[in-house]
Amino acid sequence: MPSTTAPPIAQSPAQAPALVWFRDDLRLDDNPALDAALASGRPLALLYVLDTFSPNLRPMGGASRWWLGRSLAALETAIAARGGRLILMRGAAEDIVQMVAQDLGAGAVFWNRRYGAAEIAVDTALKAALTARGLVVESFNGALLHEPWTVRTQAGGPFRVFTPFYRNAATRPLRPLARPHGAWRFAPATAGRASRGETIADWSLEPRAPDWAGGMRAAWSPGEQGARQRLEDLIDRGLEGYAELRDRPDLDHVSRLSPHLRFGEISPHQILAALRHAEAAGTVSARDAGKFVSEIYWREFSYHLLFHNPDLAQANFNARFDAFEWAANPEATRAWRRGQTGYPIVDAGMRQLWQTGWTHNRVRMLVASFLIKHLLIDWRQGEAWFWDTLVDADPASNPASWQWVAGSGADAAPYFRIFNPVTQGEKFDPDGAYVRRFVPELAALPPAFIHKPWQAPGEVLARAGVRLGESYPRPMVDHAAARERALDRYGRIRGD
Ligand code: FAD
Image (tube, rainbow, N blue to C red; front, side, top):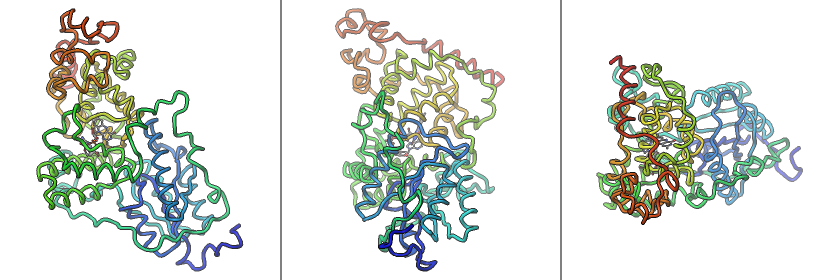
């Protein structure tokens, strides 16, 4: 029952609360669904549903769950500062949203769209059910610069190649930033489960035994404020040669905005607007800004692919790869996951991933290529590991990127381009600073051998305290032999 002191829930249909359902948009600024609710003049109710029940939804990985808990806590705080409350509920979203709407006597429900098939199925069913009960239901684009179905080839179909996609998409007008306007008037507490709600702690999103999140806590500030700060820092530093230096994992020239984007703590529109502003002010070069924007469009392209290929994380985009003979080698997979392959740059990347929930794009390409081509392990196994360990594990960018590296994807790197982990290390981590940071047992090796310790003379190894095969593994495969094997395997699906 409503409390006797609270105003009646719905004095008139136009005053029935607007329920905003947060999903991958954990921010208050530039949030079109929230903005529409505020603009409606209705009292607000804000909801997040931990949906581990709807069929076919991919459960979040461990690192993402950690991030989610922190991000929701930040959102709760921001809402509380405006005098409101974030209702937290766990269950099948279709049931929960209807139940909360009913408990509140809501007259309207707003959300920002998602692009996975299972998510779309939930949203479509919910929209039909709520509309049938007479509620206003509206959805918005909060996550992408352009809706995937609006960017089309001349023939009217989806794009399969990035560059024409980018050329086409980048000329389209962008929606204006949504600036929350109208009064923040919250719906009073009501009866039912929603009035009690749940807490973030109820959901055990943080790892306990063991607590593996220490490195992530040190590295990240989840939430809208943290996202804004990261963007500001990036712009303050003028992007510092992003176009030139974005491939260097030993330096700090990338934005690390990916988890913030994944959870919608910042929108691509906000990023583009800030870049354009800085470019106009002359604090960021057109070259750096252009390169950065094109990377944001790789994210867009990934969502374009996901929308048009809902099974992107399961099925080869290029069906020829269905015949590829992957190896079953759990021991090799385990060594890769643990950063014990014997190739320092690969091991540094896998350990950075485990410790911090993130690794640099160049290194992602290298470790993925190593798993797929040197070890011949199915890209889906790597994708699944990244899904579990990345704080930015993204339903579109992760499978699209794994397929890109595998050669099975859209506009993919050709399979026969097999990265040499030694020369790649020497090129992109020339002094070995990156390897030293994440593979400390090699830290005392001189730059000439840091990426190939097995070639170091005995006395150099001894001086550096490295005992190959004991303190650090020997390479688990020989690069040249692995390369030949991979090309041979690939030749079979090409019919060579
Ligand atoms: P920046 O260089 O600062 O780029 C800015 C933003 O552009 C990123 O935050 C990201 O949103 C977008 N972006 C940049 N490069 C790419 C790209 N190649 N594809 C799609 N978007 C891009 N990115 C994810 O967000 N989630 C994933 O799960 C993910 N999995 C990947 C798996 C593999 C095997 C590979 C090779 C790449 C993957 N990427 C993924 C893409 C890319 O590595 C990350 O987006 C990037 O490293 C994030 O760091 P950043 O924010 O500092 O990037």
